Length: 254
Image 1 (tube, rainbow, N blue to C red):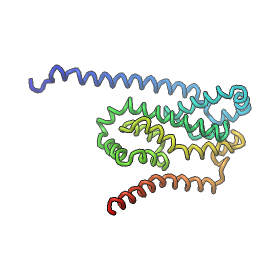
Image 2 (image 1 turned 120 degrees about the vertical axis):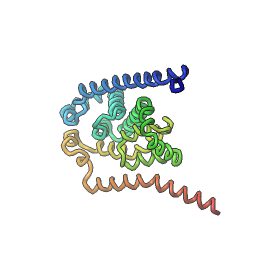
Image 3 (image 1 turned 60 degrees about the vertical axis):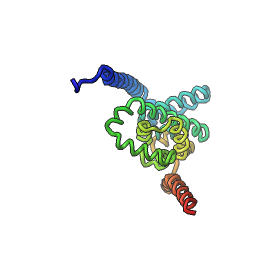
Image 4 (image 1 turned 90 degrees about the vertical axis):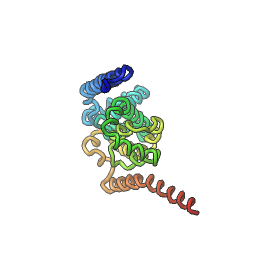
């Protein structure tokens, strides 16, 4: 008798498992819809296909500018939100199609929106299950967030050492607030977004971009310069954090 659960305890486990089951059903539906959409329309995101339709794309933009911006925004949010392949080349295409300034605004907000969707999906669907299995590892991440605050996520966004879709998923499992995730991601992803959009904006045509990729915009020496710049950007938040710690220690010892 002692090993049996009390009446108040008995419904807890079925309720939890029932809630998990509902989440998995919703996830399966969402994943299925994303797979169907990508299977049906993924060819239209292929740069070689778009290169063949270059004249039509320009004409459509001239005829329906606001509609085109809205469609491009939704496509980019979908690709990043569901972690579909092709975000980098899509950024180049947006830069080519809209130019640097409009393309930068579109990609910046669309990428952050998509990242936040991926973040919330991870938090809603997987947090409880993964928390129970990898609680120790998540505890370390949460401790780093509590200790370093927004700098931790900001550093991850700038270093480019960790793929963005991994950052979105992992951050969704932590205690970081959604608003904090959004604005830090918005700022942290901006330098990389600027480079890719600019690269696309100076490409003469999509056929050249399809054949040469980023090399169509930048020479090898320029690419090396950008890599060095990204490395320095990754060091910047760390250097800022170390500098603040140094002055704080100096003030306490004075």
